[in-house]
Length: 141
Image (cartoon, rainbow, N blue to C red):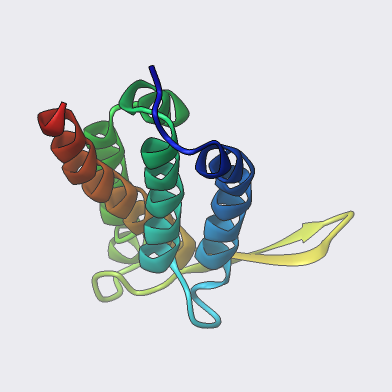
C-alpha cells in the first residue's frame, strides 16, 4: 500500500514533465548564459527524485528507462568525444569547434562541441545523483 500523500503524488505527477523541460532549457542555454549540463542535470535528477519520493522506487526507475550507471558511461563518452574534433584540426585539447547550419524554418543555427560536452555532463550528473539516491532508497527498503 502506497502511504504517500495524495497531494504529493498529484503534484509530482504534474511537476515531473515541467521540471524535465526546465532542465533541458537550462542545458541548452548553458554555453551562452548561466546554466549548462551540471545544473540541468541536477534539476532533472531532482525531478526524478521527487517522483521517487511521491511514488515508489519501481516507478522512479521506470521514468528513467535505463540504468543510471549507463547514463554515466554514455555521458562520459560524449564529453570525451567533444575533444576529438579539435585534435584532428591540430588545435588544443577541448578547443570548441562550431558549425553553422542554415535551417529553413529556423534560419541560421550554430552547433558546437560545447553542446556535446554539456550533454555529456548532463547525463553524468543525472546518472551519478540517481545511482546514489536510488541505492540509498533501495537500502532503506
